[in-house]
Amino acid sequence: MRVNLTKQKAVAKDYDTEMARKFLGGRGFAAKILWNELKPGVDPLSPDNRLVFAAGPLTGFALPSSGKLVVAAKSPLTGGYGDGNIGSYVAVQMRKAGYDAIIVEGKAEKPTILLVEDNITEFMDAKDFWGLNTFEVEDKLRDVYGPTAGILTIGQAGENLVKFANIVCQKGRGGGRPGLGAVMGSKNLKALVVVGSGELPAAYPKELKELGAEAYREVLTKPNYTFWKRQGTMMTIEWSQENSVLPTCNFREGVFEDADAIGGFAMEKNKTSQRGCPNCNMTCGNAIKDADRKESELDYENVAMLGSNIGLGNLKKVATLNRLADEFGLDTISLGNVIGFAMEASEKGLIEDKISWGDYKAARGLIEDIAHRRGLGAVLAEGVRFAAEKFGGNSHRWAMHVKGLEISAYDCHAAPAMALSYATSPIGAHHKDAWVISWEVKAGRDRYSEEKVDKIIELQRIRGGFFECATVCRLPWVELGFELEWYPKFLHAATGLEIGWEELNTIADRVYTLIRAFWVRELGEKWSNEMDYPPARWFEEPLGKGALRGTKLDRAKYEVMLKMYYKKRGWDERGVPTKTTLERLGLGDVAEQLKKRVKIWE
Image (tube, rainbow, N blue to C red; front, side, top):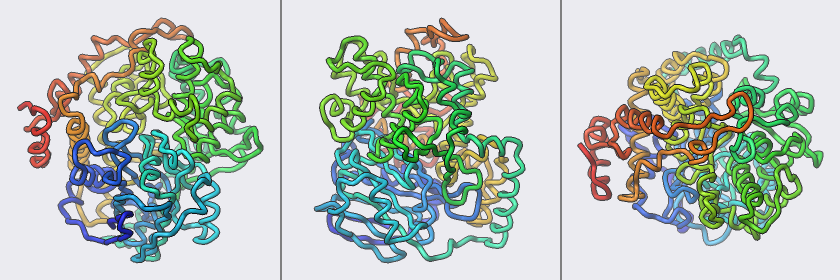
């Protein structure tokens, strides 16, 4: 469905089978749509940007963890390709309504809620919703449309175009780290509501039903299932502390003295409820009562970034900061990053504001100021890259981002593969595409090897390629060891297509290369391989604490790994896809456009 907010029109269209076969769905569809429809240099906050909500061929079926949706646009935070995935009823309801993607363009004249009910679309006045937080909006809409309606909304951060505003659902599920909430706000779109009543068509429905039932039973048999249900991703706090990768005080250190106070076992003692995405039987959202006695859904990333990374060792207070971020519609990873950056800038005298490490009251006030763009918050609302330019004093060397996207919660002083994974993530520094660090800890931290490069590409193909295009959650495989062999069977039953892992890897390579081409097209001759380097801090400032004290990354050895990565991807020494690679992946038309912006090497 294509929605034009300016004209208040919506048109449903079929797409061709070639697109499905070449790009699968989800991220693949989003990347192809944005490449085709955006002119180079378009302002991400202009009506000309596209906001794409895309499902995949497995989304919504009764299969493990299939309630996922990709949302994508040109990012206002990075200026490149931006996306995120959200576990949401919208994913299921959109497919029940008959849509694999909704493309939103233009800008509404006034605040609007977009309602999609099967083949009927309405543009509703949102004046009574504008200014409300995400929880309040969802409550009001659920009263009307019911508990299983798909609802995505933005808070005040999206309205105020905070560059790392995200999109929120189910009071704690968020997605779109690179500022996709701001894109939604720039279009005066306060919420998307989707209600579908149809059946999802499958090539072999009986086979799919039987496979799904068997797969759900299989998930329950996995050895780690019981502990996962107890702690979810929160178990990672203790693991990160033990392995010196827990981001502490703006990624200065990898261990935190109060880690036990904010870890999985501390969470268990305070746990009040558990939440999950649709179609999931390994729910990972654990909620506790925060310092305000309100419920806050926690996971590893938000606790590490709003806890150890800002020096705050009180779980209830961390939970309050997390809930406020969810209410305002702020990405918790970028938020914890910019607050930690501000605390270090204060410590070093680069700003007049006095914000000490672990200062809960100051951090809480700063969250409100960021969401409303007040004072120091107005600077931080632009992201850490912009703040470093503003503060000066060599702060760019400890501004923890890649390509403008703030780094998520793993310190890489002693993890060269994870550093390269962050650096080559297609949206900027994010763990989602290749969480290689647990493998790296076992394989050896100090090695810079071809084996590590191969592992990164393997994981990018599976995690950022297949799972983001299919579109289903990767956690059954990652956390429980649910076998990858299930997924081609699911695809066959759902679509009728025989697609093995060799072809799925090719699709993943095609999508990654197209996204890289998008970045290069945007930046033109400004593009260089420096875009694929992690922050200077990890090369220049060794760890000062813990078992790995004295460790830092080796820049020359990292560069060797990066060159290996480019060669294996079929990209040139600058990280630009070659014409040969583009043509091999069926992207010859991309090569023609790209050569207008930058020289393509053979």
